[in-house]
Image (cartoon, rainbow, N blue to C red; front, top):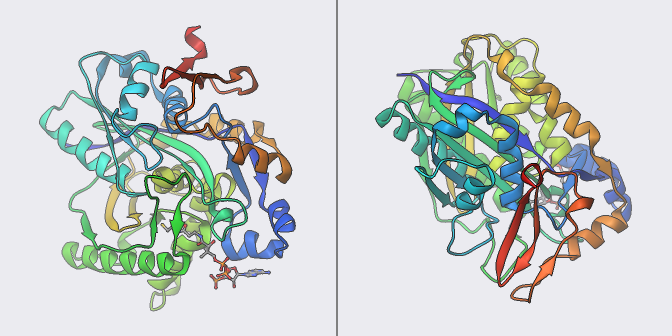
Length: 391
Ligand code: COA
């Protein structure tokens, strides 16, 4: 049975900053952020968007009534969840009006967990061929103002429906994966910003890719020629490029050109949204699928998933007949164009204006946020979510 990604969409908040403005404000050469890091714009989340609302807004774009009737499993991958106990998947399940006879969970392993979610979904569909599984990957990346990681922040979510006979791309077996206890990036329970050993995280990431890619090729008796394109977990676009270049040193010119050209296409959305942690690999995939004009049905795409800490996986997918007709390219491009650029001063105020822990009731201004699904406030320590379409 073929199982894979039947639908895919993403959502990012309606505000962004230009990384050139950030460079100027931080006294850095713009070339460092634009070229050295490879980021053009960075999404900024208002207080009314959290990992739940971002994911639900992404899912709204892809779900039809038929999906809503058939989805029996919600797997929510995040490292910026909103509750230590209750799964974010349950909030999303309710906001999307999914049927009661569904499982809803939340899973975590830094930026890797959406891949675990896809593999769990694949197993579930293999056992229950009529099932449709909603996998959500949603995060707000926060390192802090004036930190080394600030340029690699962002916010957004990817929503995918995993099903049999997928319209977009199969998820093939085998895949290769590995775990290695490392402190390259983490976020203690008491902190709303991440800690990172930046240079070490880059080394760890590249080593994981080299090891897993070599293992995969050995296991499947394949070589660079067998991959039409490779997509990467992309905290910032230079990072994936470094990993790709690390396996191209001895490649022939045709393989080099093809893989580097497709890397340019795949990095586009990541460069103008920023780091969305769990969804970053899948945003890279969406960009490749929507922005290329030469990938044909049947092409094999290699996917490298990495979550600091660290767990990584390399696997492949095969593009399905007419996949282009099942993408949301126009909607996504429009959403990105409609975003409003804000000043660094405004970004800093939005960044600092977080909901304090354990305070009393608050009400948020959801009218200022064009997103259909918003966080409207907190009442009796319970988050109040609103789907404006249902008001
Ligand atoms: N024009 C063009 N490039 C420039 C430049 C300029 N004016 N000035 C500097 N650069 C280049 C540097 O040469 C370097 O390129 P290289 O990496 O190819 O060598 C790059 O910009 C970054 O410069 P660097 O001095 O290394 O930046 P930094 O000390 O601020 O650290 C990170 C950068 C990425 C390590 C830091 O932003 C970080 O920790 N980010 C988070 C990492 C992360 O996301 N980890 C999670 C892993 S999953």
